[in-house]
View 1 (cartoon, rainbow, N blue to C red):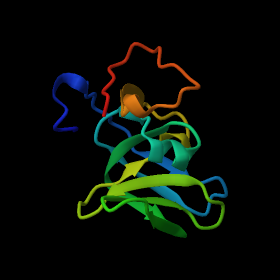
View 2 (cartoon, rainbow, N blue to C red; view 1 turned 180 degrees about the horizontal axis):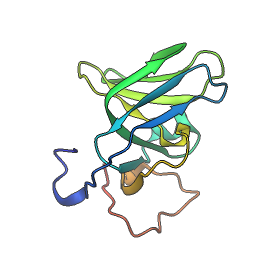
View 3 (spheres, rainbow, N blue to C red; view 1 turned 90 degrees about the horizontal axis):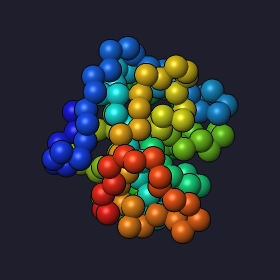
View 4 (cartoon, helix red, strand yellow; view 1 turned 30 degrees about the vertical axis):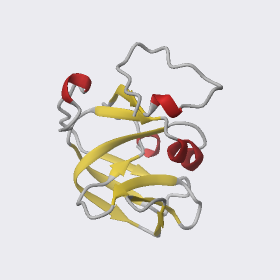
Length: 138
C-alpha cells in the first residue's frame, strides 16, 4: 500500500505470487505484490539507469537469489542489477526495509497495471505521456 501521495494512487489488491529474472536468468526474485499498482518514474536518474522510464512495484517479503550488485546512485538510494548480464532490476531507499522491482523482469502474466507517473517535470523531451493516468511533477 502506498502512503504519502494522497488521492494520486489508486491501490488495487494483488492476489498471486509473481516471479521474475534478469536477462541471463542468474538473478531470480519472487514474492507477493503489496498491490497491483505500477509506477512510472521519469526522473533523470531513472531514465539514465533504465534507458527510458523506470517502472516499479513493491513485493511483500521478497526473495532474491543470484549475483546482485548494488550501486549507490545517490545519498538516499541504491540500485540493484545482475552482475553477470547487467539487467536493471531493483531500487531501494537507504535505511528502509523496502525494495522496488522492475515489472519488465517479471514472468508473464503479471496481473499488474500502470497507475501513475512521477517526476514528470524531469521527463525526456522525446516522448509524451498520453495515457490519461495521474501525473506528479515530482
